[in-house]
Image 1: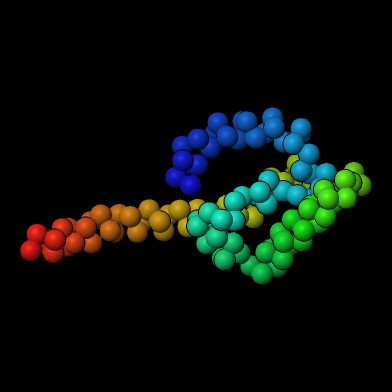
Image 2 (image 1 turned 45 degrees about the vertical axis):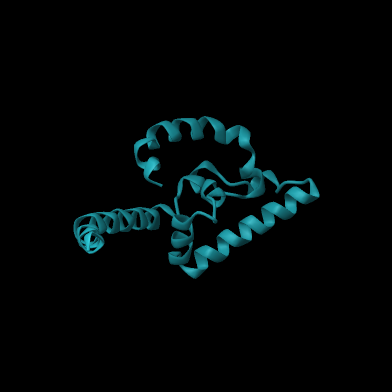
Length: 122
């Protein structure tokens, strides 16, 4: 997640040119639906999402899998629009999680590590 901060401009330029050819919109999916749920930071973000938002995400993912397995897509009128895809639902929580992780690292470096080092000398 930390790498995400510094490279966001580069990634957004690439993702904006990749989106039209990726085809996930034809399944009703949004870009954030592809974030790796095995990642600890993303797990925390998903835990913090409102239930309604989580249910909507799960429904989109299930529907996308089902459509893909059937070899079909949604009718074009139901595709995810660029405006819908641009409405981030994870970013506010992601910012919080990343900030808290950084604060924990700083706290550990400033307060806990010096104490741990003193105890190891004995």
